[in-house]
Image (cartoon, rainbow, N blue to C red; front, side, top):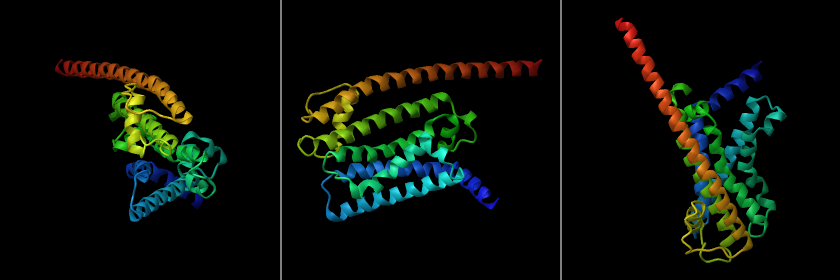
Amino acid sequence: QAAQNGSVMVAIAFAQPPAVIAEIALALAASVFFAISTLDLSPLARQVVDVGELTIQLCFIVAFMLRWYSKNFRLSYLLQREMVFDFISFLPLLLAPFVDQAGDQGIVFTILRLGRILRVQRFLKDTKTFAKLVGAESPDSISQFDLQVVRACSSVATLVFLSSGLMYQAEHSVNPQFPNFFAALYFGLVTVTTVGFGDMAPVTPEGRAIVCLSILAGVAVIPFEVGQLAEAFVDNRETSRDRGAAREAQAAAGLA
């Protein structure tokens, strides 16, 4: 009974807005640390970044175990999408001693590090989870349009981040145009949005493959999110109009 009560309390704690915000902050901080780690840093700055990234991964492990504990360590729970993303977020820490990060395995290792940003998506599934993020009193106070705006921005930002990180990993060792993540970020933005200024170009087969996949993903994701946003906007207007009509009817009934 005590163990069951403990698991329930942990589940409730994870559902609270401070815990949700902390998880998102850690995921974003891990992404920032990855970007900074690609710069030419001093030994002290490099150590700070490494310690910060290690600390975040340890927090991910603790959160993973607590979330699993809240489900009484059911093995089936580990197969849920959110738990898979959580496991990926600290998998680089477990693989680091066995992976040659400068070789071909480096791309796989980078994918795992970049995958931490996917933790944010778990809080954008529906208005219920999004309400926890913004601290709303109830899901009813969150419109589908508000959720879709954040979801669209998050999807595009995640796509650009993943594309940029992979381009950096594939190109930086042989292409001086990609010395760090931020140079790759510029390239990723113009690639995913299909602008393509032509001032930077990949030279490796892996880089060219990533460009092709990024363009295809951009062509698929951006119009889809815009379409979802337009649909949510129309639904939001119809809902507002219906609520306004209902209030007017109630007011008229009161006067009568």
